Length: 373
View 1 (tube, rainbow, N blue to C red):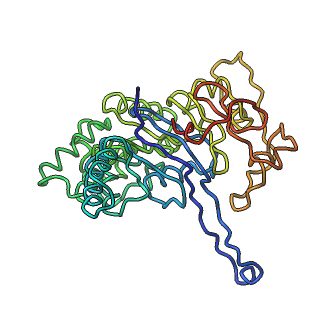
View 2 (cartoon, helix red, strand yellow):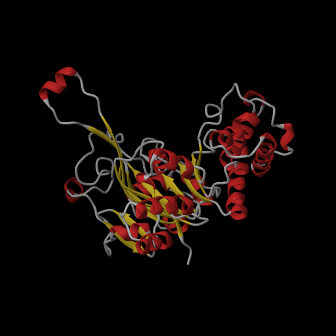
View 3 (spheres, rainbow, N blue to C red):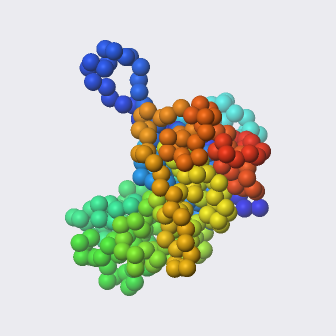
């Protein structure tokens, strides 16, 4: 049985809204932007799990919250990769010495438990990030134009005090460049970002993540700003990294077509929640949620004989600071019913490992723990 590397349960990221002076006199109630509001999923070892949704649905915030680049306001994130062992041992030894747990309890937690990412102090979170890295969307903005490619990739090693000397760090930088497909590495090491192409810049960003030898990568729209001709090369590179290095991915995209060819499982996000989740093939070929169906309807098909009716959603996406009651999708849903306007839909299974939150679907209710298994 393939083990989990990450389990996210009921994750929330709410941002407080600033109010004007007059509004503060009228109401003392704090208003929130609910960017992520109760998201649950798991990612297995060597799996590519994809979050799909339009801009503003909360998928990028979810990825950043997992790494605590933004702080979650609720829920849990547990990490089960090998990188947790030294950190957990350190934490549990400390707890045993202070009498908070017994040695037997500590041994059991060490063997079975995941590392609670939200509970880590900053210095321990810094160590864990060596095993959990992120590839950013914009290869033009994410690289320092004043640094050479070598300095950009070596910086994480310096910050984390990795490498006994400069020669050892150079070896790791060269290996990271090779793994990212920039060969021969010495042709790129001393260039600056403006001296390489967009695709090569993204490879530099990938090398910067690989240099710390991670187990898990968050890839935030890594191909959305690249030419179509280059996208397939970057996607193939990440598949090779999964197969050759055993990496697991949280892949974030608005492009369902990319998700279909690249991922093992898909979670469809809308307005801070996952509305449908399951194996990629099952979700794309047998979609159940009206929003999923709308996303699929606009994906181009290579077969000119195959006609697909486009589903045009009415209206605009609601404001995440003023989420509608009932189903969040009901203001735009072409199949809206009275119950949709009043009651939030319960997640139900539609097939093995495939669930949806929609009043149109009837099935066995999904327990919270089943969303992360």
